[in-house]
Image (cartoon, one colour):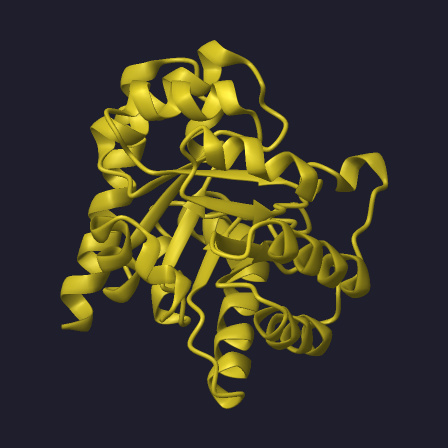
Length: 257
C-alpha cells in the first residue's frame, strides 16, 4: 500500500485530481506571527497543505491557526523531522533549496539522494517529498527524480524561480518567471512516467495565478506557492491571493474535464 494513502483524505483527493495547493511559509521562516498569518490565509483561502519550517511549535501553531489544514515541514537536516512529525506534521520535505542559493550553498544529486535515504531510514512510514535542485542540467534532474523515487521519495517537487530572469511586464513577465519550474515539471513528469513511477509532482517556485494552470498542464499534480503569499504584510491581501490561486487551480481542473 502506498504511503500516500496515509495522507488526510481531502489532501489525497486533491493530489489524485491534480489540484493540490500548498502554501509555503518559508523553510527559514521561524517567526511565529508570520507563520500564523500565512496559516490563517491558507485556511481561509482554501489551501490543501501548509509548508512550514521544521519546528514542532510552528507545526502546532500552523494547524491551529489554519483551522486544521494539513502541515508539511521542510528541512535539509533529516534528524529534525521526527519531532515535527510527532507534533502533527503529515508530510516531510527535503528542500526547497532556493533559500540556500544566495549563500552559495549548492545541493548536488548525490547529497539529495543521501538525505532522502537518511530520512526514509528515520521515518519509514511517513510521506516524503523531495525537491530536485534546479541548478542541475535537465537530464540530470530527470534521472535524479527517478532515483529519488527508487530511494523512497513519495512526491517530487520542482523549483527554479530564483534562476528566472523575467524582463517583461504583466502576464508575460509572470510566465517568464515560472518558465524554469514549468519546464522541470514537464520533463520530470515525463521521466517518471517513462520509468513506470506514479509519484506525484509538485511544481513550486516562481508561480502565480497566471501560471498555476500551466503547471497542471505540464504534468504536475499540485503546486507550491510561497513568496506570492508570505511576502505580503496585509492578511486580507494574503487571503485574497490564496483564494485567487485556488480559483486558478479549480479552473484548470474544469478545463481538463
